[in-house]
Length: 155
Image 1 (cartoon, rainbow, N blue to C red):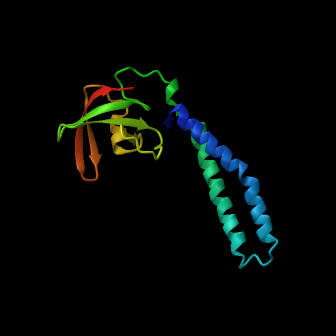
Image 2: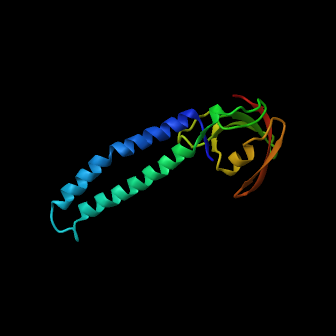
Image 3: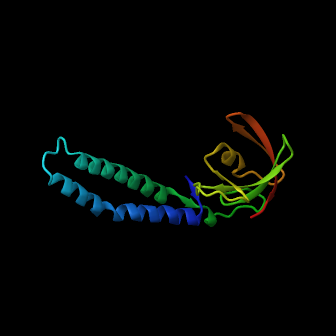
């Protein structure tokens, strides 16, 4: 089961609705390309069919995610436990610096100067999920393991 925030689920549903709404346009592209004649060497036809296949695969993937996703806002989580949507202050135990991290279900792609986004599927996200204030977590990164102390949950 995948946990997402309410906003992330709404974003997934909007993307799904957009792809479904685009179906008639792709069918129209295929029909127009088919009308050009010889399908064997018709690049427009093959491109439209490829686009249709990719979009249908994405629709199926998104339908499954929306159907199976659990909205984290609906779950009762202890106040001292890190969970999806939480912003936490972590202290890097190697260099004693601290930073803010936000645990998200899906990266927004934006860069906020205040906090670093980590997904629940990333090594950092997996280590943070359900950890508690005061605990030390170990994160296995490509350049080796790092340890962080959870100082506080900001929100």
